[in-house]
Image (cartoon, rainbow, N blue to C red; front, side, top):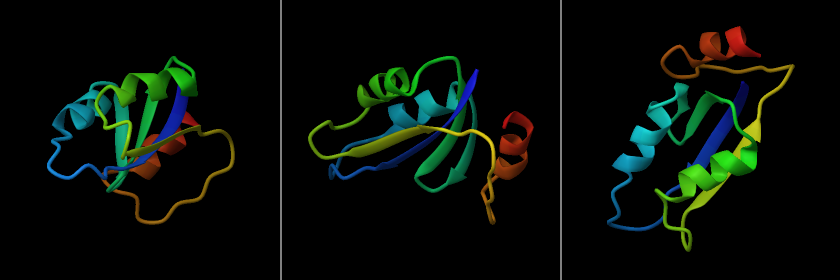
Length: 89
């Protein structure tokens, strides 16, 4: 398994992103910041990007997927995300 930081800018006005949020919530995850999730998944960053782009506007929205390894520091992450991350990295 690999832990990824998934961060995005949802820029398409009027589009519902409920399906994107449900997809992220369907795997082991922590919602770290408003537009940033930590997910634990057996896949490459490219595969995660491909999976999530089906729920996004590929002309306007922005997405970054980065594998999290080793040293980390955080402040005031949401909903227990720091403890979730510490257990996995």
